[in-house]
Length: 222
Image (cartoon, rainbow, N blue to C red):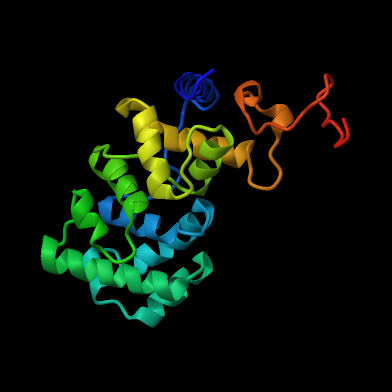
């Protein structure tokens, strides 16, 4: 099975497993989506969703965030990690959006990636879910890990992996493959203890652990 065939098989299996795939961040508008995505760096979506209600209550608009006190923002986002950097990025992004985009989140890749701390991953999330635009694949840690374990890519960086996935998959799959890989990574193919015996992709996974017929892991010496 070549990579294209494997990719099609993987997509079909994961669509069947996760038919209701969607983003797990909670937001009400494009600005909140951008904020939540910035906060999700090196943090779980679950934690972000716990933090954002108080953050949005304190700073309900992009204009209010642009004038925010950084120490107060740091306190509100502290539990997401890297809180000083994230607070600085939120305030900086808000200021640019107010000053250069009339208070509206920009809807181009170039304008989004000009915002502090916004790379292609964050920009793709905002474009996908905020504007319905698909210009690439969101490559987070789950997508990177799953793509490599399934031998769908050769790249070792998010940008290279994104390019390879865009070449491998039809454009109509670029948005959903991210969420399918994220769910698969969360529920089955975790970083440290993948549940290979429960994985519906084991038969096509070059990285799958060896299993005996009864489903128990084979010993190292066979």
